Image 1 (tube, one colour):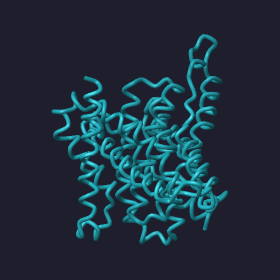
Image 2 (tube, helix red, strand yellow):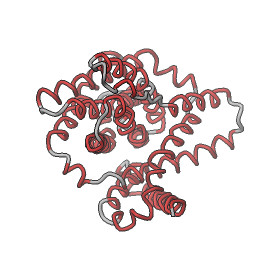
Image 3 (cartoon, rainbow, N blue to C red):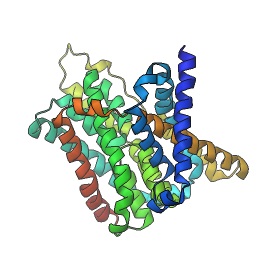
Length: 335
């Protein structure tokens, strides 16, 4: 049953990916500037909040497989679109921008969450980690460090997915009005949008060059997850009592980010036939579309409503900082 459910779920995400890709080819859709990935997650959200409940029992494991494993594989294979000289173009300023975004967003989350919105510290840190680094993946990685309860994790994931999805639609509309070059806009998008897949979708809506720069910047941000968790763990341990169990928390290293760099290194050496690389890129496009469909299917508006207004207000405040404050940081560090 589990194997059948996995294949049915993967088939469902594949069908939505195919539908979103086909829609993106329509002339009137192209005039709107909507990419296949953007349309695919929109279809996923639509189906996820209408029909999915009737087939979830038979497809959920496959959908979750697409949302996690296929997404990670898609991110790794994205490295075959990028070379080290392109990574070098981001430079020290890109790394500094990411560092400032991560530190400031998380600090603001904890302070606003606990002092202004009167949320507990765990929920504030989980939402802050997801907004600061890489969305749901960062929330899940932070959970064992802060020992967050399941419902707090669900609330944090729901809020960052919601505002990351909003960013995916808004950023391409903002591009013509920000006075940024394609490379600068890519760095802005990669340093401030929540999920890797959302960064790719937003970047592609503007252009492939923007998407490449945005993903490089985003992967630098993702790789900050490991040192972030180590520092957070040390902070948590410093506040723990001798009998506390905080020392049992496990640090999760984002290995997919390391493998993304390895794929970029292989691509930089140009040792693979061009036809093979093109085939890998085509497979990667499909995997990313399936992951976006799965993310949409798992974005339940009911769960967001149940979270209450305070977590949403915190996530919205962080989103506003990422857009406005992130833009200011980008202009100051890399004018």
